[in-house]
Each structure stands twice: as C-alpha cells, then as structure tokens.
Image (cartoon, rainbow, N blue to C red; front, side):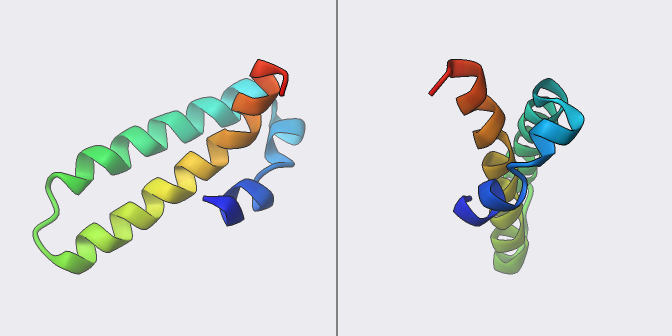
Length: 68
C-alpha cells in the first residue's frame, strides 16, 4: 500500500482526485470480492496484492478530501 500510494500520488493531481478515488474504490471492491472465489493459494496472494495496490491508490485522494 505504501509503495502504491507513493507511485500514484501524482495521479490525483493529473486526472483529478474524484476519478482516482473512484477507481481505487472500485478496484479494491472487485479484488476483495474475487478473493472469495480464489481456489488456490497463489490466486489469493495475487488478489490480496492487487487489493493492497488499489487501497494504496485511494489513500492520496482520500487524504486530500479530508484536508489532512
């Protein structure tokens, strides 16, 4: 999450905070739902990694929305 938030922190400035936050939320939701359908351990590991990336993407815009 920390690495993704550093890499994608400029995406909110470039594309707008709302689309980046929405993409992060939708991606995290889909990755979380797909974790429930994982049949092998490596499927779950990859999906949890994607979940962390999407949560990291949405950290920057959410901090900007709250004013922190």
